[in-house]
Image 1 (cartoon, helix red, strand yellow):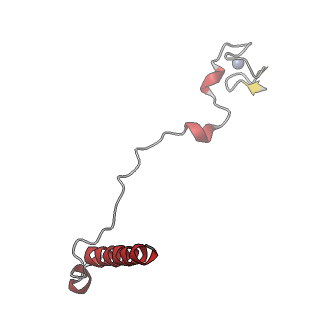
Image 2 (cartoon, helix red, strand yellow):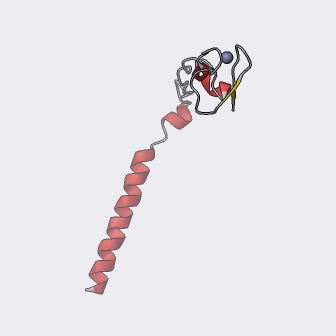
Length: 84
Ligand SMILES: [Zn+2]
């Protein structure tokens, strides 16, 4: 049931206007929290380090990955040659 905020009359749930005074009941949402003004969310702040430490910045990640791939390819080639 919807209670009119103006006159207090109890209306039906499907009523959009108060049956007594005509107050628009849809202006009173059932869940007011959902209708609170939403402020624009703050821009996401990423905390990427602007400058890595020299020891980490010089650490070559990709060559190690390529080296592992190369070893894997060599092992695969050896395995295939052994099978045949
Ligand atoms: Zn009313």
